[in-house]
Length: 112
Length: 111
Image (tube, rainbow over all chains, first blue to last red; front, side):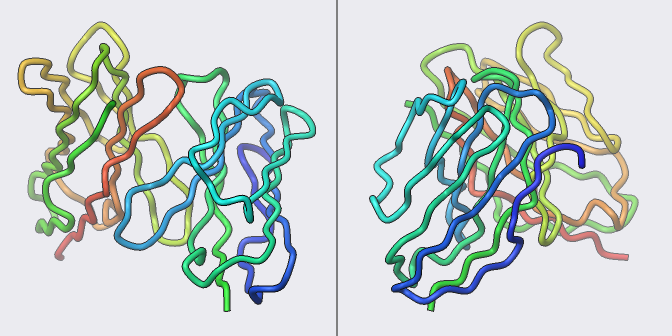
């Protein structure tokens, strides 16, 4: 595999479920990002990690919990989500912060 | 704070016609500027970027963009549209670590 991969590609969950999104980058990058893409809204940066340390948390609700066990993997743990959390969740990586970002294909999340 | 404005959420052009997608930005520091393209059910792919140096930047698929500091603009152009160019295009500005994206412009190409 090359580039940035995300699993699953599609996820349907109830409001009481717990699930996790996975992102893996095969580019040797040091920074990783989670974005939320909703219809008719700009891409929203959720979390930024550099060398496995969280750099930024843009006022994201606590029902979203990121985890970065190493520089190649990034998770987004989901718990007690709301229907308005339904969106495309994109992972990205960059060599260093402020370099261009490479995106994965995204996970289409539907919360019922 | 930085921001990006993309004029026109939807642009339609005929195949073979000029493509012009507009982007204006605001930034408190010299910006890094990017254009990304998103095809249906896919992530974003980098088209081109401006960091420093030459203000006319060439990217993939025949696209180019010109950084105009006086106009705070970074418009994307392509001389001749192809059907395969139909996608959504995002302009983005970066200061330190945060990429701020515009709302996107959906490009339709009419045969």
